[in-house]
Length: 250
Image 1: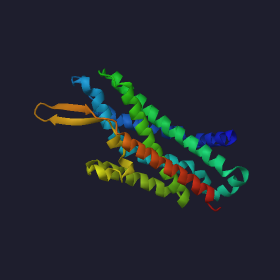
Image 2: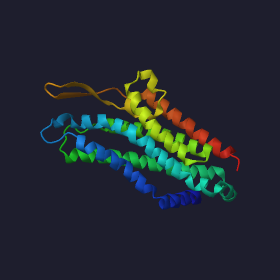
Image 3: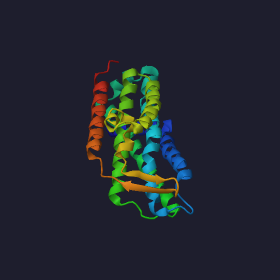
Image 4: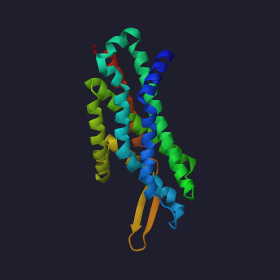
């Protein structure tokens, strides 16, 4: 097992996966930086404003980012039909376990870098009312859970079709559909997994007065039912991906 994991890490190094993992949070911060409150703005609710916008940014960027990682993770196996060779050298279980661990680690790294970069951005601008620990943990868990669910769904698509392009197209289309789902009735959101970042966010915009330019943010209760549903959906894609590898004809 350790040899399989080491081999996957070497593949990830040659694919420059770390660069992709850095590119996604950098893109989020580059988007958040111009719109982040600063200067003479009211900095007491600045962290609220920042964390209320992050789910929207993740809805646009993460489906594409996880699709890139998933397609690249199986890209070597697609080229030259390498599974025929790999399945003679190692078990399918060890191959899938190593790839799942590497992919999970990459998604967790992206989430951690995004959260750390966001907090650094806020402290750099002198924001007050630092978010409580439970809010930060909830944000990390929700973002990672949705991202892992999308990652394994796109990895499954790549394996079933033996082509990375459909996963990338699905990620791009899903980002647009997920953003549009924010304006749909709440029940519809459950059928648009790419947009789960938004309803799972706990910081929300309550009101905005155009005359006084006063913005009021609030904190809603944790959406644990949807978080559990997302985790269950991610587990389904995880198990279905393993089943596809185990039964795939080569």
